[in-house]
Image: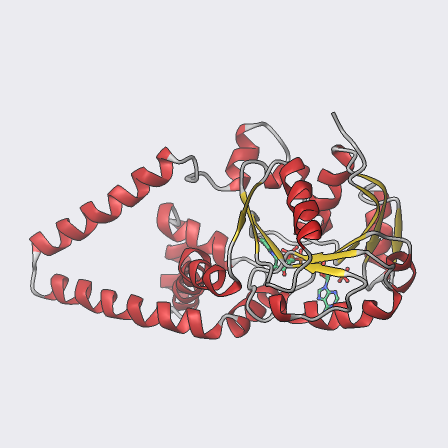
Length: 305
Ligand code: NAP
């Protein structure tokens, strides 16, 4: 059964996440009217052609005045600027939220008492970007982490939590600091490793590079998928989660050195022990249903992604 949780919503930055959210909100009938904001006329037209929003604007000023929910879905480094730009125009009691992948700095954004800001991170995505690549089912059965502070209006947190639950997510509340540490290991470090490995391949001699790409399978292919993610989004993530990523990287480097030593000294026991330990983690992931990437799930469901 669907109901209008919000009267009207504006999504600013209708890319992969923004357009997936727009599609999910409309599918579930959670908003009466949906407005999309893109900086380019060309993308505004695309949003209407793809029937993602009811109305498209190249500036947020008009739609935010008509909305009781505003979700900023732009890269992490631009979220604060976008919020400061819209604040003079938002309705009384409007709820502003975001979807940024790093929460420390964003969660500290101060808004006037007349509105609420609920920082959020739906932990679901693919390496693709842009509105044409979004899909409503992206969020199904995934976690959405909310990082309110002691200043955040509790009623608004409840409402944003209901929104994500209604489109299929499991919601968890965390401190912004804990969120950023968890994400550094779970998502940011793996991306950094993928960028490094694929970068190393791109520095190889032409013939070697050709062979690596020609026979690409398994591990390397998965790394290229991750390393094909949006450069601006990932630049912003690393620059905004600097401390947690550097801490993780330090631990990773120490572990890598241990493995390096085990290989050099032909220490079979150390290698097998290590690989047995990591295999257990994979099994645990399978058991809790977190092992399959979102895009593979969609392919299995026979959906075009
Ligand atoms: P995306 O597909 O590139 O979409 C972001 C959109 O924001 C762009 O289409 C662009 O639209 C707009 N934009 C870019 N820079 C901007 C700026 N400086 N000011 C205003 N608008 C700007 O990226 P995405 O994957 O949807 O990611 C959006 C947010 O979701 C990021 O904060 C990211 O950290 C978070 N997130 C991503 C994933 C993922 O896996 N992709 C998962 C969870 C959360 P126009 O050019 O049309 O204006």
